Image 1 (cartoon, rainbow, N blue to C red):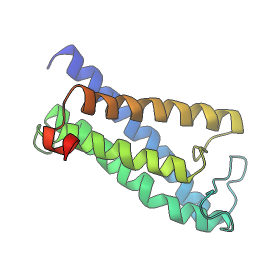
Image 2: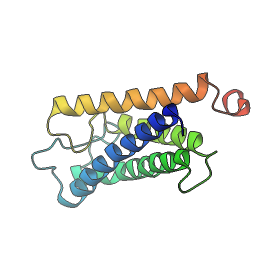
Image 3: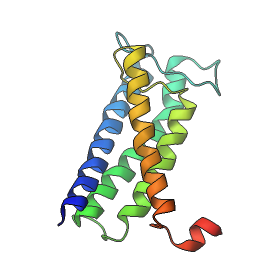
Length: 148
């Protein structure tokens, strides 16, 4: 395994871990309502939703992203699934993660403060953008996926 592959795999794994931590925070918010001393997540699309409802709306996005990023890292490492799937799983995870972040109005679940939520969201979106850009511009995708 080369250095680039180790860096990519570690990055995907860390991105998955960050999503898993946020998923735990969303699960807690869906059970308890308010997030306690942490930033409470809502959704601009469903602005009338209570904190529990907003968390329940967002859980599937974070769960799918966690599975995609962990699966991508495992595939890249050759641990669980075919090593050919890691790029597609990363691409799918980045799309799902970005959609969840947009629905959550840019508030990263589990953040300790509004400033930390902005930082966490920015880091996640930079990572998602890097994955999407690499897949499209470095042609990790089959041409038919890009052109149609």
